[in-house]
Image 1 (cartoon, each protein chain N blue to C red):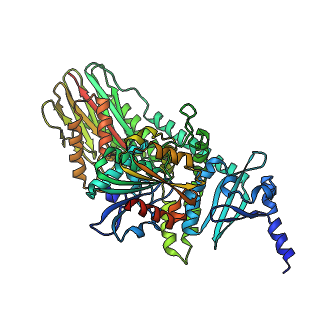
Image 2 (image 1 turned 45 degrees about the vertical axis):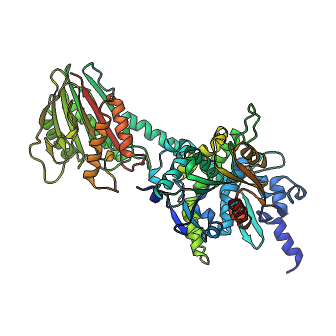
Image 3 (image 1 turned 180 degrees about the vertical axis):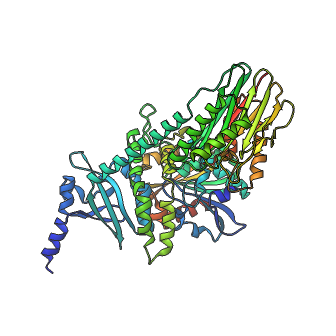
Length: 267
Length: 364
């Protein structure tokens, strides 16, 4: 099966425009970009996709070994780029996908023109010996896994009909059922472990691509110190502190997100 | 309606109420929530709602709950743990709706429900452990070890549901120089298929010990299946290898043919010695068998259809592909060959069918 099918690749905008790949983070799918990508469709070839196990991806293709590290997810990004013959790619990655883009760019630097990292983290768990604060302890991650377990009990039977019943905005119902109810709980659990136990600090130096680090205020997933660390260790990056709070400015502050990316791309 | 009545309803409702800004900053809470959290409202108002959650819950909030609220405007029956003033946690279910520029959330304590969920999870884990133990018991038995023989298997029960498969393999001594080899596939999966598999596996072992050759053994097993109403439409391949001569007798009841890899030659399926599945209508007459002369170093690969059958391609494509994989890994020891061929054949796909592959090499 081609990677474009496996990952439910959707394309918009100018067929011969500069390619812009949007990559969603843990917990969601390509719908996370709904308020952002349209702003770039006028002058870019926009490529959206779902990581394996999420949204409309082919769940049967999930291989725990291949996806035991973020490199497996980065390999998928590269496969999509190869299949679509994308060059000079602008890669926009949210959350863990920022690092996935970094790994892809480190593996094939010539393929990427710019990297936009929204709420990146090189390591989520504190490393006292290394003098690094990621924001979490190993016990916190166990708490997250328990939380996932508890909530997925309800997703399939409860969430789907509730959201499907959202009749005044039926298009939302369909999308959200796909997003949150079709995400395989076992894969979500696996992805959470791989994401939050990853340590990619040493990889940052291998990312030669000009990068933008977008840092939100009061982001519990990727605190400001973490964004500053990523910025300081990337060979060629700029850091933009956003007024938006939380971890998902692509949803909560799309205008500010779009403006920051536009400004970076035109610099 | 007086303000006092509405006020009382809000403050003393049988659930906690939170009104927050879109970024989670708490604007107002009710008395029930104060009591539930053992915190006065002065400690709550002005903080962000997610700060009331355990850290794991906060991650969940940021990665699932907040996006859901932003996209759908509502999130229902989310399980969280709230942190009380004294540091203890309260299991709760929360439901939120976005109304204009505020988020309204109701909070129900759900300690009993959470305990019940945890019991369900434990029961599920226990069920899986039992299934695994049953599976291992059904396939019990050491593979024969001999200087002239190398046998290896790869076995993957279907991943969905209980991990009990209807596929089986077996390899056992018939006497001091001959080894019996079996790979079979019972229709269906789960407990029923697993117990049928165990019964047929034992029956094959018992019949083989009476000295029946593979064809005659299948006839006897067919009779057993009919008499006892067990294992209709099961397919299996039975082999008998003479370690002194390399003579391999083979019979296949509706089962995919084994791949034969003679030294210096490309792998090929042997389509001889075939008859219908067990207890199929119309009944098979005599069940033929064939005899092959293995050359020293030859490899034989028995397998079930889960290895090559995929919905997204024709059967013969899968069989051709399997031969290529056997060829690619033919130099490996039998155990590694079995693992490598199975791994590559599935190509990372999780299969909904059982997968079983037995490889043997006769070293002469």
